[in-house]
Length: 192
Ligand code: URA
Ligand code: SF4
Image 1: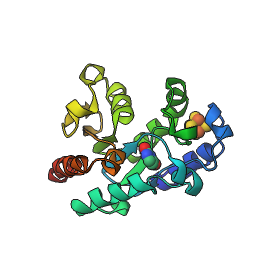
Image 2: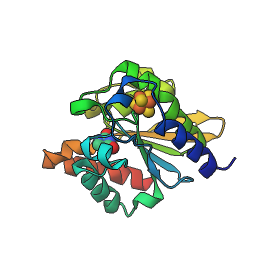
Image 3: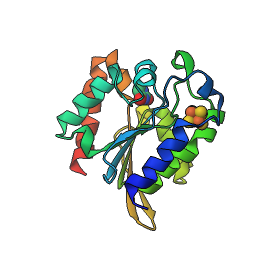
Image 4: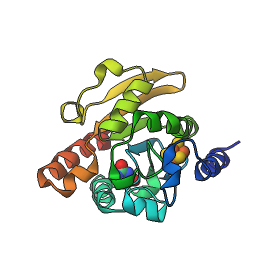
């Protein structure tokens, strides 16, 4: 199967998923979108209010910042793939629980397996912890304020994957200094 077919099959599974309690309150699962054979995947936390309504990732305030950041390094949404750890919106934007992350992780793991990115950008603490654990770098886990903008190289059977933890773009909606920090970290990405 090619990437498009495989991702399509996964999408149908996610749209019908009831593996954790969030299916009861979601409006639309947010599968993820973008290029299906890109080298770069971005991983956020979970859909927010607007994402839940539209079924698309990063379309609210944080999404505007995200677009600005991509723009600042001459990338478009169509050049990358973007998704979240959780595919369904947690009520009141509460944090994901470990149980929900565990239930949903099969989808993200499959997305990574199909797209085979060379660079994985983790937006915020939840995505960073998940990805560092996944690639056996649990001992590198620190708060995002300590490791943002660093690059972790992982050797896999299919080549080297670079993991780059970044602040979650939502932090820049209430703190302008954070926008500058994020822009600096995106430059690190551009160099790669
Ligand atoms: N925040 C996220 O982590 N993901 C989204 O899709 C939107 C906001
Ligand atoms: Fe299924 Fe993930 Fe949605 Fe839970 S959050 S219902 S595991 S798709």
